[in-house]
Image (cartoon, rainbow, N blue to C red; front, side, top):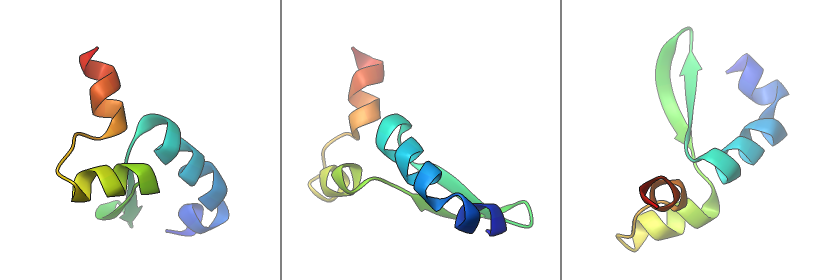
Length: 56
């Protein structure tokens, strides 16, 4: 979490470019950060952007 706070902009960039980013606290998974585009696609039942790119 500490690193996530310090590098939030970088983590957001990675989520936009590579897909959901796992956030951990003391080594345990606590959340995922996803781009708004991936969030909207997930809500619509569509595959995430990076999943489509990997399938091509």
